[in-house]
Image 1 (tube, rainbow, N blue to C red):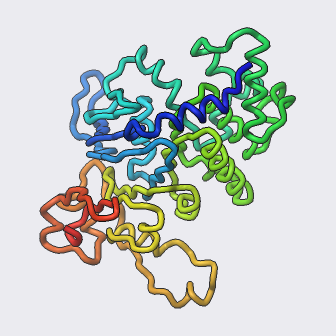
Image 2 (image 1 turned 135 degrees about the vertical axis):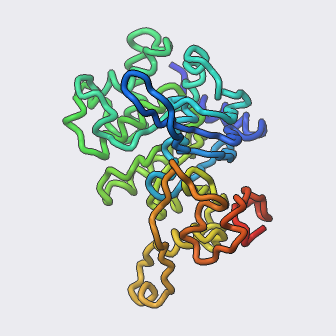
Image 3 (image 1 turned 45 degrees about the vertical axis):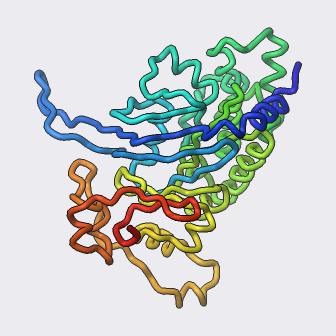
Amino acid sequence: MPDTVTTQAAATAADTTAGPLLRVEDLKVHFPVLKGVVVQKQVATVKAVDGVSFTLNRGETLGLVGESGCGKSTTGLAILRMLKPTSGRIVFEGEDIARHDKGRMRRVRQRLQMVYQDPYGSLDPRMKVGDIVGEPLVVHGVAGDKAAYRARIAELIRLVGLLPDMAERYPHEFSGGQRQRIGIARALALNPSLIICDEPVSALDVSIQAQVVNLFMELQERLGLAYLFIAHDLSVVRHISNRIAVMYLGRIVEIATRDQLYKEPLHPYTQALMAAVPIPDPVLEATRPQQIITGEVPSALRPPPGCRFHPRCPHATATCKTEDPPLRDRSGGRAVACHLHA
C-alpha cells in the first residue's frame, strides 16, 4: 500500500504558502442560563468565550494557556464544532466552518481531529485497540479491504511507539501513557492537518509527560502537523509551542512567540503567570520578586466592565475600569490587550 506518512508530509509541505491553516475571528460561545421547569425563561448568559481571534499556520504549534475556567477547552470544542458557536468565523483551510451542518462537518473532520485530556475516559473499554484506532477509517468509509485496513492500523500503532500485536488488547491492559498514544494514533488515522490537543498530558505521571510531548513533536516534524495545544502547565507549553496565546475570562489578552513571552511578557496577567513558574535553582527562586495575583477570577456570568483583569491588576487605572482594551498588534508579530501598552 502507499506510504501514507510520506504522502501526508509532502502534501503539507506543498501547501505552506496558502495562508494560515486556521483563522478564528471574533469567536463567541455563550450559554443561556434558564429558570423554570415547565416553562423555561432565559435569565442570564454565561460568556465562556467572548471575542477570541487568532491564526494558526501550517506545521505550527500554538499554545493556549490560562487559568481553569478561562475558556480554553470551550474554544477548542467550538473550533471542532462539538459546541455550536454563538457568533464569529472559524476559517479552516480557507473554508468558514462556523455554520456548517453535520454533513459538511463530517467531511471537514477528516482534516481536523482532537486528542482528549483523559486517556481513560476517551477510549471505549469494550473495544479492542485495533478497532479503536481504525474506527475513523470505518466511519468515514476509507477503510478499504480487510488487508489494507489491518496494515493501516499496524502502521498507526507503530507510528506512536507501540507494537502492532497490541491491537488485539483492550484499553484496561495499558498504562495511562500508552492509552494516550492510542488516542493519538486514532487522531492520526485520517491524515489530519490540525490536531487540537486538550491538556493531553495533564492526567499523566510527570515521568511520562515528557515522552508524550516528545512524541507530539516527532509526529509534527514527520507529518507536518499543526497543533492547537491547550494546557495550563507553562513548562510543557514552552517546550512544544512556537507561539503562545494567553486567555483570561473568555478573552485572549496576549499573543507572542514563545521566546518573546517568556523573556518579556507585556500584559500584567501574563507577567504573573510567568512569575509563578518555578526556577530549578533554589537560590534564584528565593531571591526573585514575587508577583501574586490577588482576588478571585470573576464569574463569566457577570464579567467586570472595562478590562476584565482590572479588579486583580496592580497597575489598573481609571481607564481600565471603564474601557475594554482591544487586542492590539505590536512589533515583532505579537499582540496585547492592555491600556498600559496602547
